[in-house]
Image (cartoon, helix red, strand yellow):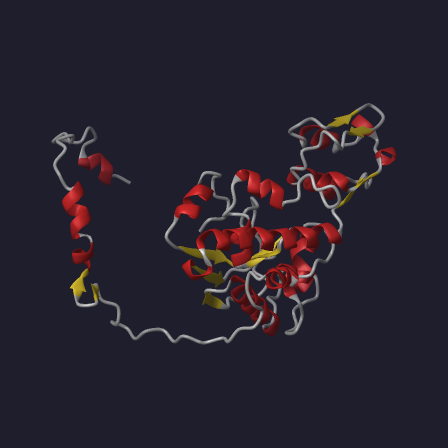
Length: 313
């Protein structure tokens, strides 16, 4: 799974013979959903690629272009003033005794820090991101995922979505939430748009989970858009269409929204054996072990810690 991967892993991906993108399908406070497209479009990019995909300094949709009302700020007297002082890693925000100063040109557009301040601000100094900026980010994510696929080749990438424990927001946050719909299972395809679309379609058909955000935002009934109504609103934002990323992916040629859902029954008990095409599993690793299994004589005969100590609770 490549989500939140280090920047150097993007180089490894480009050099890979093939790739299986394994994703946890769930809600996301910016992407609306996090599935195959989001996992590729963000997790498969370099740090610079992530920054660009988030439209961080985009002249129209960048987070440094949101509405700002400094006249509403109470300055250092505000109980949330410390958050505003500490949130900016490039110190583009300054809080004075009577108000606040935001140097938008110096702003790096890192987004997450300001996003939390927007939610917490009791005076409405920050307007927050618009629906259009969220939609633009979703389109950029699909475009970024298309770059991933083109780098390897469509025939060399496969996708598996685990649609289980689907909360309204992403696993990248330092907290979780009650799943909003029951587990749907695992979905696999060579088309990232189709596999994400299938998960969305199935999420529409099921009843939402009582005592979850699905109940809070009144989308318990089958036929309702579970993630449109919960993912971004859960984090204090507006409704953003859950279809945005798959629509963008289909529009640019990343994949198709058309699919045939083929149900795969579990294999019978005892069907899985450690033999493959006439050979034992050890046959396949014989060469590798022959090359590496030479005695380097680096081991000491005894452990520095007695085995008895290792057994103690």
